[in-house]
Image (cartoon, rainbow, N blue to C red; front, side, top):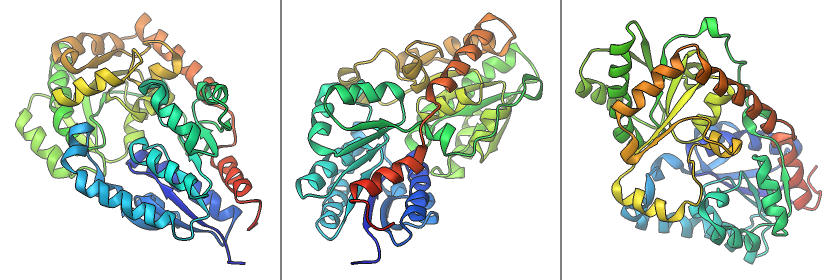
Length: 375
């Protein structure tokens, strides 16, 4: 018998890389001889995986970005499929549905068990991907509680394992209101997002600063985006506001009194830090038109999706204008009903996402799918 199983993990972006790294550590603890191969990033490597490809090399935004880089993505998919044909005992896709759904179907067709961790957002994109998952996975480990019933109705084995922000990550407790000040700007984790959204956030910040003097603004910098890009955009925006760059996004979320944030997992992190937030998002016209035809839910912010309500204001595409965003931001900065109501819903969110064994439970499920061997 070999010293341990060979597991392939596929997490093609920054948030998936962080979540996958927690899982890799638990897999190594449970099965010390396991060999873990990964399409991920530095976090996966540091957790003990052999990094096959780095997500930085495939970080594009939207449908047009994928089309422009299609030959590279085709080569990546072919290479990962070749790996699945060569001694992989378990495949663990982590979110990233565009590639992972095809790889999962391929793996299962070749008899490789598939444990999907962090569900694709099938509830947003319609039934087509749900049908694919029915045929492509052996087990779903989901992090949003309403997903459990969704998959169970389709006869897919599923378990809610709790949200990693509350179970696996060592997130600090929210700061008291008296220790917070300023506004955090989180323009996304991809180059294309920062190019399109940061100028919009800076123009909004100028309007907020003009209406309420003395406010400090902090941009949470993504490590996947060159610092020079932020500096260039700041230079083009001109002066007029007190703005700085920071590397630790969670620290910015925790100490800010308000966040202006691109749609994504950062909305959930900010809410769990109990920091009021406004969601801003803008993509190219082509990407927006395609997404509008596909997306089946009224809100795009993950915190709003989980709570089933427009708790946090959303300014998307043509609505994403500084003159519309700034008055809402000023209202949430003030002590008042809007701020108090949002903070109350954030406490509800924490209760909703708690529970489950996190990555420890996912690693246990992985061992079960491997037949309980390699303890």
